[in-house]
Length: 88
Image 1 (tube, rainbow, N blue to C red):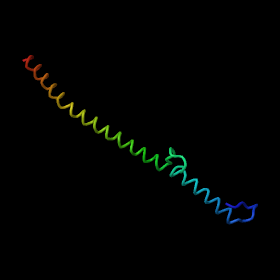
Image 2 (image 1 turned 90 degrees about the vertical axis):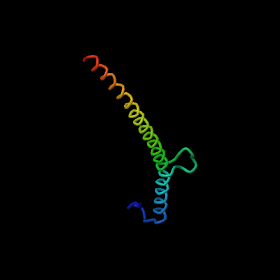
Image 3 (image 1 turned 45 degrees about the vertical axis):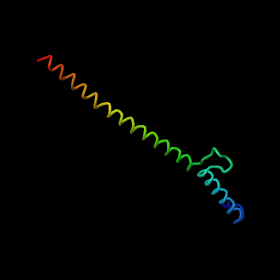
Image 4 (image 1 turned 120 degrees about the horizontal axis):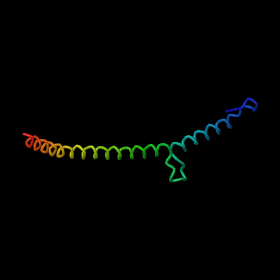
């Protein structure tokens, strides 16, 4: 952006805008020479992938707990039935 003390220079202003846009693009996509830098887009994708894995793990754990609760409930019913038979 041109300063009021300096004359209006369109080329300098265009270079400043170009540099700022390149910086924003570099933040989003990552630096092209640094293969470890994935930028915000790559980090978001990685986080989504990790969250999906955690959700699948949670679903498996819930299914296992539900699956184990059925035999445990039947066993508890048998124990209570035996106790009721002994009390009579």
